[in-house]
Every structure is written in structure tokens, then in C-alpha cells.
Image (cartoon, rainbow over all chains, first blue to last red; front, side):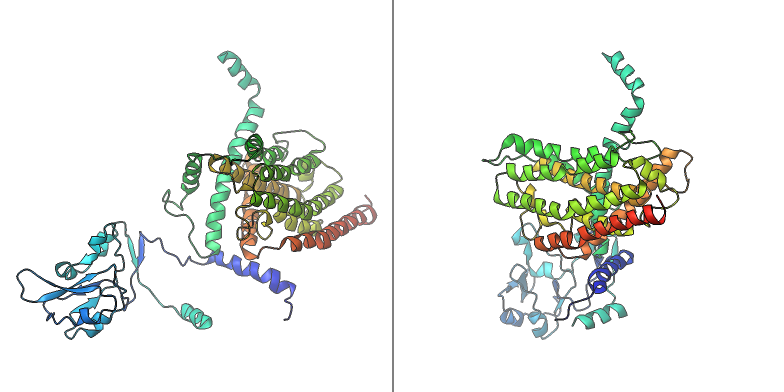
Length: 158
Length: 337
């Protein structure tokens, strides 16, 4: 292996690091700023109850046994209820649904202090999550942008 | 009783102001808090992070106060087989040593806490050479493998760093023809000593990292190798005390570097008051110097202990001696004394 010279061992690291002082930080102040999810983020699953025919295909394909078909008051059919403790967000249920009744939101903030809250029954599944309620301190929602520089960086890395 | 106190304060107003406010205890404590905050923010910016943001809303300025309050409210644990008196006293004494050395640094013409003419430069080096002894005492009194290894590594690093730094300071003394720090600063009003003493400055700057024990020579508390070096066993307020000693050490050596090589308080007159002007310029230079220091800290990988000693003995000491020879030749042969 060729031994590196003085400049590439001593001067280059210093200049490279010092240049960063003028750059913008890549991190965000999370509870105040939040990066909007990318278009196909696999987040919380929402049910359209009018579309669902209660076939149970989602429960059948679920690899984590997270989906159970539950009856709803005033309806004849059974609808999926998801336990997000078990769910691995693989998206197979969304793919298999014959009527496209399930879809994924980009909200990933699903934490709770009580594990029973993480089982979403069909009534709750129909309501999309409101980010303003989850993060009351949120001030700015940032849109993810793939810049030219960033793409170059990724290509170089890969 | 109270009359005596008022009379005492009235008579000794000037030294009391120097000791208590500037550049004494208040300044040192505030600057230490600022330096830690500045290090965290600046290092974060260099790593494209943000650093502390939440506490205090504006750039996380309350974070350090919150951290110190947390440490102060914690229990102080004495290890079962430690030498308890030594364990306590060495940690308490540690920040006093560099703070005592700061008393010799002039902040304005004729304005230092220990305001005498004479061998103040030598006295500074003498006081600062006591610092590692207390680190060794701390490591030994904890009676623990990790602390003792950390303390011994401090001795190794000291061998590598202290001799070249003293030799490079000697170059400045020869060039100035005096040991007095106030005279040395006063001589730099026309030209900073970094220009005639450039080789000495390089040696000083590299050895400086060995003396402040930061990366690339943070060998005594190598975070990935030892637990936390000589302060593994310290908790709560005593840990805060050792950290305080660490940052006052940085402050003392940085002030020494500014005083010896960058003209100390000299600078264009912005404020009419000489004290305000001197303090402004010395702090301005100090902040830029700290920024360079922190950049170096995260730019380079840590040297191994043998690499550090090799650097010190094979390169820095010969360079410092060469600097001495060049200084003597230029001063007494070329310029004719």
C-alpha cells in the first residue's frame, strides 16, 4: 500500500471538516419540524369501510397474524382489525385487497403507553391519523426533496 | 463586623474586582460554560448536526446549566477501597491549578490578577506542570484498574508533550529577551511573535493538544479504549469538578498561546477604555483559536501511545531545539542582539 503524503494526511481532513461549518445541518428539530413522509412510505393502515367486502384475504395473507376480522355494530360483514404491535408494515394486506379498501398513510408515529391502544378496531381504522393531534408542537412540515447534489452523493456511495 | 467588611472592600476594590469578576472566578466559570456549549454546537455543525436545541429555545443555551444542575443533585459515590481523602482533595484541587495560572495572564496593559513584573512566564509553566500530578493522584486514589491505566497514560503523554511545549516557549523568551508575560505582550504591538517564531508555534500548537488531552491526543481518556480514563470513579459534583478542571486547563493553555504568539490584548482601538479593548481582543482571538482547536479535535484519528511519544521525541523536540538555534542565530548574529 502506498503511503499517503503530508497534505492528504494532515491538510485535507482539516479543510474538509472546516468546510462543513458553512453547510446547513441535515438533521431536523423533530417535534417542531417534521419531514413529510415520502409518497410510498409504509405507515399506518387506513380502512375504507364502504369498499370492504369482508372477504378476509388480508387476514389470510398477513405473515405476522396481526389482522383479525371483527364484527361492527349495524353492519352485516366482518372487517379487519389490526394489532400494530405485531404488524411489520410489509404491505401485503394492501396489495392483496381485491377492492383496494386498505391503504397506507405516511404517518409512522404510532407509539402508546398502553399496548391495548395499539389494536385498531374497524371503527378506528377508518379514521386517518391527524398529525396535528399527535405532535401538538409541530410548526413546520418539510417536504422531502431529492436534490441533484444529494443524488450525486447517493450514486457515489452506491 | 460589617464596618470592617465595608472598609476592607473599599480599600481592596481593585484586587477584589480582579479576583472575583474579571478575569477571576466569575469570568472563568462563565467562560467554561460557554466553552463547553461552544464545543458542542461547533462540533455538531462540523458533523452537520444541530447540537443542543431544546433547553432555552435559543440555540440550547440552557443545556449546560441543566447538565450541571443534574450533576450537582446526584449522589457522590466513594469506591469501597479508595483513598477517600485523597480522592476528594485531588479532584477539588484540580481546577485550582490552571485557574491559578490564569492569574498571570495580562488582559490589558498592566492588568493581571497577579500583577508583578519578573518571571511570570516561567511561573506559568511551573504551575501548569503541576496539573498532571493531580491527575495521577486522582487515578491512584480511585484504586481501580481503569483509572490507574488512564493516569499512567497521562504520564506518558506528558513526557511526549510537556518538554517540546516548554522548549518552544523558551524560544519566545529568547526572542523577547524577557520572562515577563506583560513585556512579551507589549513587544507584540508591532508584530505578532507567530511570524518570527513560526517553527516554535507549530511545535507549541501540536504539543498543546497533548497538554489539553483532547483528540488527536486524548490518550488518557480514550473513549473507545478505556472507560473514562482517570475519572471513571467520579460521580456527581466531583465529576463536574474534574470536567471544570479540564476546561479551565484548555482556557489557560489557549490564553497562553494567544499571549505568546498572537499579541495578547493588542488590537485596533474599538473601545475607549483600554481594559474593555484588551478584553475584547483577547476573547476574540480566544474564540477563533477554540474554533480551530475543535476543528482539529474532530478532523484526526487518535494517535496510539507509542505514536504520540514518537511524535514528541522524534519530531517535536528536535524541531523545538532547531527553533532555539535559529532564534539565537537570528537574534544575536543577524540582528546583532
